[in-house]
Structure formats: structure tokens, C-alpha cells
Amino acid sequence: MLKVETRQAVHPDHAKAMDTEELRRHFLVSDIFVPGEVRLIYSHYDRMVVGGAVPAGGELVLDRVEETKTPTFLDRREMAVVNIGQPGSVSAAGEVHALERGDVLYLGMGSGPVTFAGHGRFYITSAPAHRTCPTRLIRIGEAKAVPMGASETSNKRVIHQFVHPLVMESCQLVLGYTRLLDGSVWNTMPAHVHDRRMEAYLYFDVEEKNRVLHLMGEPDQTRHLVVANEEGALSPPWSIHAGAGTGSYAFIWAMAGDNVDYTDMDMVGIGDLR
Ligand SMILES: O=C[C@H](O)[C@@H](O)CC(=O)C(=O)O
Ligand SMILES: [Zn+2]
Image (cartoon, rainbow, N blue to C red; front, side, top):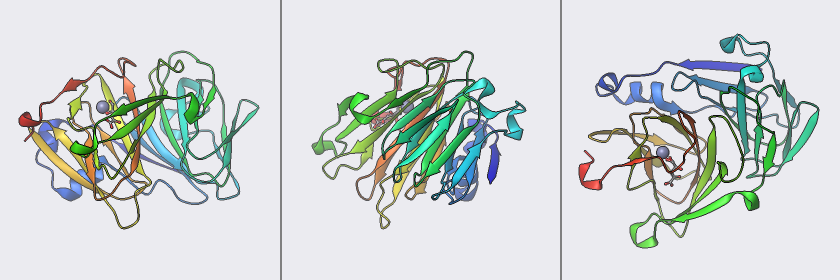
């Protein structure tokens, strides 16, 4: 079963006036992991699609998606999949890729229908592509690990870069995940924006009793979303994306836009946040 929800892009002047419910309706990513279903959110920010596939021991095929009006979803798109569940497999273009928890699979444009199987919980990200890049399974040992922050500032974490120019080639997608260490709770603080690229977050390994206060909005107009495990946020090009948890957690970040330069960020001084 396939379910697709379209999210229109929101102008920051409009976002300023939103109450909690409206903010959640436009920017919260939730309910994407449902056993026996593929659920996608089609965002008009850079036409990034995020979603989940939970085959629950069976098989789920992602083929035609009405919203793209192409014969198959990946005819003019690339995709990166992260398994945040038990081992499973993702098959495309006649190849079966076994994904352990934490593995990332990149599928190039034109890979054809994608079959999800096993007991994985597959987080899907996809952006329009203009050429095909080689499909690649990346395990954490092959990703680039960037230690960041310190326990004194409660933001000690490791940024694991998977779909990243230093690791592999893609068209638009840049993806990895960040894990908080030693009781650190803050991600991406100091904060930044990058108008050139939208970003999507998915928080995982958030204990049931915990929540993350995800910060969004223009730097001088911040808002927050209270997010639970396996929920996330669509971060518009004009928005900061940061968060503090009531415990440790990890999150997958994915970006698409004008460049794939991870370091291209406009930092925001903490004193300039409002
Ligand atoms: O543009 C880059 C993204 O916002 C994230 O990769 C930041 C992040 O994982 C972190 O600082 O913890
Ligand atoms: Zn960012």
C-alpha cells in the first residue's frame, strides 16, 4: 500500500503567523512508518520526498507514484534509504542489497521499481536528478565520521556523512546521520541556515519517554516542534534546524538543492537568535 501526502512550500511571512497545529501540519514529519505500507511526503521544497517503508516480513514495491507522473518513481530521481530497523533488503535494477541497521543505500536515477523486504524500517529520501550516479551501499565504517561539539556545551556528537562528496557521488542528495554522545542533547547549536538547500530531519533512537524540541524558523523568528521517536521536520531553506532532547538521540539529515557542499552554511550567532 502506498500513501503520498503533498506539502506545499510555505513563505516565511506566512510561517510567522502559524499556531502550533499549523506548524505541525506543514513542517512535522510523522506517521511514516506503518507496517505493510510505503508512506511518502512530497515536499515542494526542492521537491524532496521523505518517507518510510515497513515491509514487516513481507515485500513492498515502490514503483509508480502518481505525483511525479513518470512511469516509475526513480525515472528522473535519485534515492537514499536508511535502515533504522532490523535487517532487511532493498532490491532494484536486478540487485538485492542487504541492509543492517544503520546502513545507507544510494540508488541512482533510473534504478526502476524498488522492493523493500524483511524486518527493516526503511527511511526513504529522494530528490530530482539529472543523471545517473552509481548505486552504492554504504556502511558506517565507510562513512566519514566528523566529531563535533563538547560535553561542556551539551552538544558532543558525531556526524556520520554517507551520501557526501568525500564518500560518493550524487546529483543533489546529501545525507547522513548524527548521534549525540555522553548525555549531550543539543544538535546543530550554534545554528545555521542554507538558503541554497532545503533539509529534512528524522529523529530516531529517541527513548519512548523522551522528546526533542526541534527548533525551526527564521533566525529572528524561531518556533519549535515537539517531536517523538521516528518523527522529524521539513526544514525550509529560510529556516534554522536544531534541537534539544530530554535525552540522547540520533537523527538523519538529508539535503537537496543548488550544491552538495556540506560546509556551505550561514552560521547564526547565538546572540542573534530570537
Ligand atoms: O547542514 C547540515 C545539517 O544541518 C546537519 O548535518 C547538522 C548536524 O548534523 C549537526 O550539527 O549535528
Ligand atoms: Zn543544515
